[in-house]
Image 1: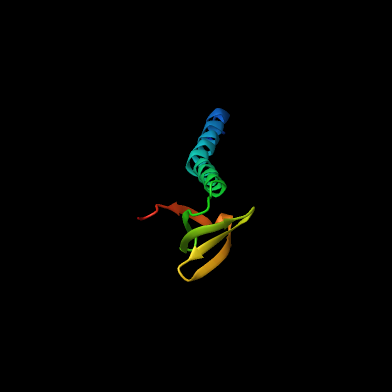
Image 2: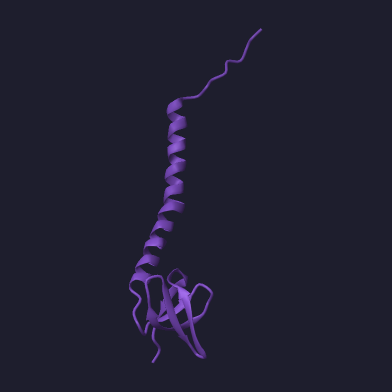
Length: 95
């Protein structure tokens, strides 16, 4: 009778594949997420009075007051206070 030998494979190949997956996920998921978080922190830190902003909910207005963790935005018909982290982007001033 001939028995088939089971080969465990090379442990070096296993580690290379695992390392490849880790690098793939780092460059595909982790690194872009960190970059976006850094950009959001810079955006929030550089808010000034009079900036035109858009929130993550799509509300657009002009910054009237900046506090430690919140911003007052002037809308067409009134104003609202929102968390700084809810600011999605600065808009170009039309004029």
